[in-house]
Amino acid sequence: MSSIQTDETLKSNLLRIDGRGYKAYKDIRGVYEFPEFTLFIDYVQGDPFASPSRMRVRVPQRIAQYPPETFATGSRRVGLENYLLVEFDRAIRQVAARRGSGKSGLMQIDAPGQEILERTAMRVTADFVEARFAIGLPAQGRRVLGRQAVAMLCEDLPQVVMSALRYARNNTKILHRFVAVNEDADYLRAQLSGRGLIAFIADGSILPRRSGVDDRPLTGDHVIAWQSPPELAVSFDLPNAGTVTGTGIPAGVTLIVGGGFHGKSTLLNALEQGVYNHRPGDGRELVVTDAGAVKIRAEDGRRVAGVDISPFINNLPFGLDTTRFTSDNASGSTSQAANILEALELGASVLLIDEDTAATNFMIRDRRMQALIAKSHEPITPFIDRVRQLYTEHGVSTILVIGGSGDYFDVADLVIGMESYRPQELTAQAKAIAEQFQTGRKPEGGDAFGEVQSRVPLPQSVDARKGRRDVSIKTRGQQVIQFGTETIDLSAVSQLVDVSQTRAIGDAIFYARERYMDGKRPLSQILDLVMRDIAKGGLDVLNGRPVSDYASFRKFELGAALNRLRSLRIKT
Ligand code: ADP
Ligand code: MG
Image (tube, rainbow, N blue to C red; front, top):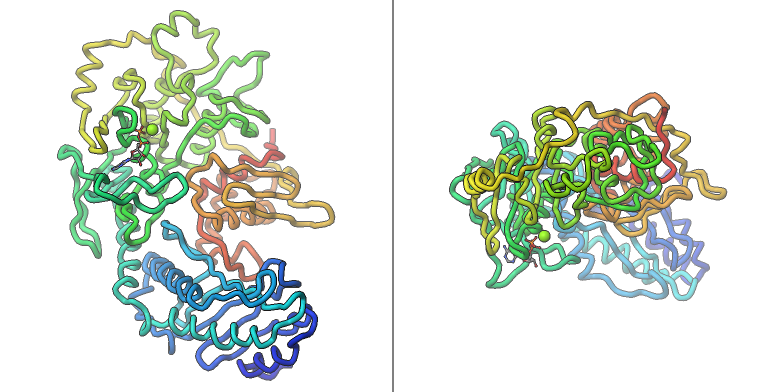
């Protein structure tokens, strides 16, 4: 058993079990030395219809030969790995064939979407390149198709590996673009705060997407590329792209105004996604937002656990406590308040809000309404009375799409107007109008935002057990985690962009619970410890076995998932 197994061993084993029951495949688990790489068969599926088998290949750098500068830093390495995923995915599509019943013949790797995320499916080190993928082992009915398996594993796979995972066979121009683009975006994001900025949109960027379900760039003659208003133009010197010019959005309170259908939400969406880097050709390669930017929206119906929403909501009917607000069915305004305070609790630096998905009564209470409904009968202190305090007291900036209320002119540092998809600098004009037409509204809620409370989650309220299973964590698409018997709904968490992030977050909740939730540590610290472990040991720390489909995520989205766990309880 301890003797070295080779591709020849694998081949003869597969031929030997040809025609036997599917379970015979279980024997091929193990490690095989191919002439140019090592194949690890980590998990073998129980039948042709079950979730596919999981394998890894490792190509030594002696053969892969990636120049050290292509993976010398984290930014470059992740760019390179994403390129290799695209290549590997392309190569398996070329050889893919149906080879029998169920998933027979399937070859699948966790290829990237528009974002460049770190993925466990591909890893480049100084010693090797490792790809992790899924294979549907071929069967006829439930009988092993040994010859088909040999074709897949001993012929197609080596072909895929040798064409996708060797520098000599890669498209070096595209490879270097992935590396350069990712490095430039990370560099740019790291430069923002030193320049007093929270976001940058390079001239020439393409913001609109093809559709609500297709994240690729919109194409055609009618697409308008970003062109900065001269007043907001700033330049950066990037390591690869050289000098780039575009719009810098300074820290503070920024309004995006303009007529309906003029590109306001498109801009905000691009800023939301600017916490991630994007692949070459995406159009948003140089649309970069502060890493602490969090999209905030109303989310009625969500669960809220013990959040101090009193900066926004007070004196609820029946004396409900808003300093430890708990609800199984939060309203539009209370859910939006909770979303803000949860983001602040985790250290958000920028809030992104779109009127399209905000609760109107949370955003504004104008003079006439103040006259009709006395403050003593209105639990809500509207955002307009807190947005400046958030900046002055907590250093938290806001970018707000608001085409419907000019009351916000009074509290804005910057007003960007979108006119037929072209941005204009309208601050002075908006301020002059604010002078001319006073709103007459009285500020509400006092002159301080106050402290943001931190909460201590109770570990026993985070329970992954289900039936006889000690740990049952599943994802259903990008937006749902089945955690034990609980269903976590992430459909309103718009900065979660990839199902592989969702998968990793599901397991990270359990990891946080097992390692760091002790009934004493506050939530933010727990999540910091999880993120620290991942930064040190990679996403693999989340699981005992090598997982082929995790993607990197932020502390904020992990927190968002935990905060939406309906069983979550907070220490009182
Ligand atoms: P608003 O929020 O101002 O109502 P949207 O951002 O939703 O407007 O944009 C309206 C439509 O215009 C969308 O279908 C969007 O894809 C398209 N669009 C946005 N920006 C551009 C652009 N730069 N060029 C072409 N079409 C765009
Ligand atoms: Mg809109």
